[in-house]
Every structure is written in structure tokens, then in C-alpha cells.
Figure (tube, rainbow, N blue to C red):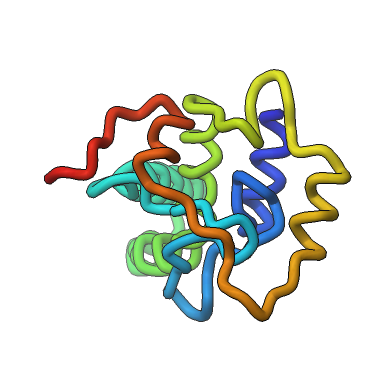
Length: 158
């Protein structure tokens, strides 16, 4: 199951069904999956985990990027330039995958009926989901019901 969730995250697909895309265009994310209706933002502050993933990857790439030039005694402006470029570009470019990876981690910690430790959506269920007419709105799900699916305690009040 972990491999499937990571594969869906790499492909920027819905972690629940593997069909719907996560992003409309640019940095605009769908509120819910266009295919299965799963609401992506589970609660206020949900994406804090994706920011932590993005920050960790950025810091690792900076360390990996600046230590070899430092050890080779490269000029300081070059080393600083590499570090700054990585510090600016990595969070922007890794934004999409950090969100998808965070959703994968969330699904690993809180399995749903479609993606759980014991069962994954069958091929027939997936075909039925994909073959559903796209003209109508995607099936909507009650957020409280979805929270119950993942074992959350969201009651809808702030």
C-alpha cells in the first residue's frame, strides 16, 4: 500500500482513488477530487505537514548542494549562490509534491475504506469510477462522514 500511495503522490493524483488530479493549473489546487469527491484539505492547518516536508527537503538539498563546493574550496560567492538558488527554487518547485506526499503520509496514518491496510480499490471499482460521466458534478461527500472514515474527530464547528 505504501508504494501505491507514493506512486500516486509522485504522479500528483488523488491518494484515495488515484484518478483525479490534485492541481487545476499553476499553484491552484482543487478543493476536492474531480473523480471521487474526496475533500483534500481535511481541516484548518492540514497543510502544515506539507510545509514541514518541503522545508526538510529544501534544507537537505542545500546541505548536499553547498558542502561539495565548500570541501573543494570553491569561491565563497559561488557557494553562496548555489545555496541561495536552492533555497529559493526548491520550495517553489517541490510545492506540488510536498502536498501530495503529505496526503500520502496522512493516508498511511489514517487509512480510508478505499485505501486501507487490508484493501485497495479494485480494478472494477476503479473502472466504474473512471467511466462515470464527467458532465455532472463529482459525487459529493459529507466532510463529517469523511472525518469518520479516517477516524478524525472533526465536528464541523470552529
